[in-house]
Image 1: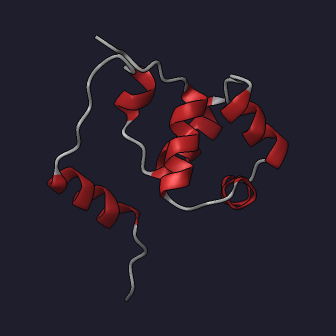
Image 2: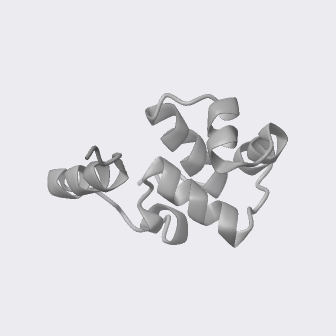
Image 3: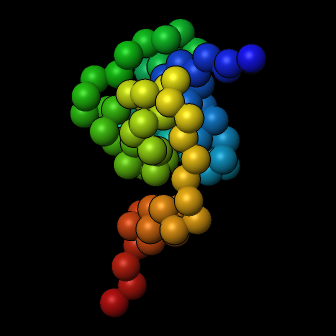
Length: 92
């Protein structure tokens, strides 16, 4: 059996790619430096709780990917839709 080992950095990088964001764009949205994001994605730097919270929210990450990386995680279509709606901007 082949198991892919995910690190926090790889989870963030994968989610950033899926959102089609550059490091510069994501760093600006998170109000952190470009170098801080590079360090988190590539050098296994652990972000502060505040930054981690912003990352999870901005990238609409499933927290289980971070806290339980060995647990198989498959979102249902409903969970995906709820997350997309929650993260969308409300237009009055």
